[in-house]
Length: 145
Image (cartoon, rainbow, N blue to C red; front, side, top):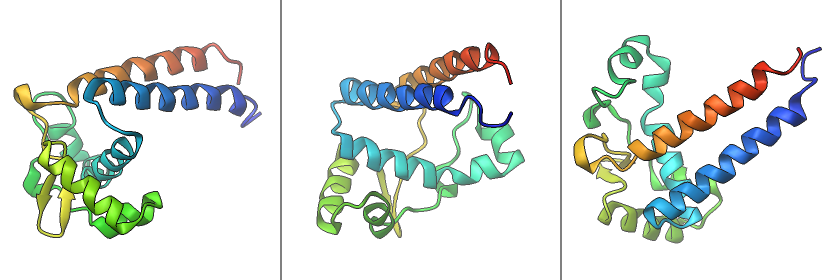
């Protein structure tokens, strides 16, 4: 029966979100609003890699990052509208995240810059998320359909 385990699976997804938020806050000293802003920008500025099989094959692994020049800019308006923050609060927080190197200002807005080498602050986060997804998959595989 489709959806029979939605409450069970949802509890693990909520746990994933909660653990991710705590991990990002503790690792990088970010506020919840800053984590949300980075997540929105990361999602929007890397959306093409998830849509394009060629991009996913070439830039979806650990060896090569999706180039900054190919990442679409995310506007302040999109961010503040998406998150329900005021424009001024969003502008201030984004400016601070740019100054601290979490985001990069480009024409039309900001992007999550390509994460490579020693400046890659997302490597631990990516590893954390993969481990969490493995846990969710293990629980899901034990459940009857």
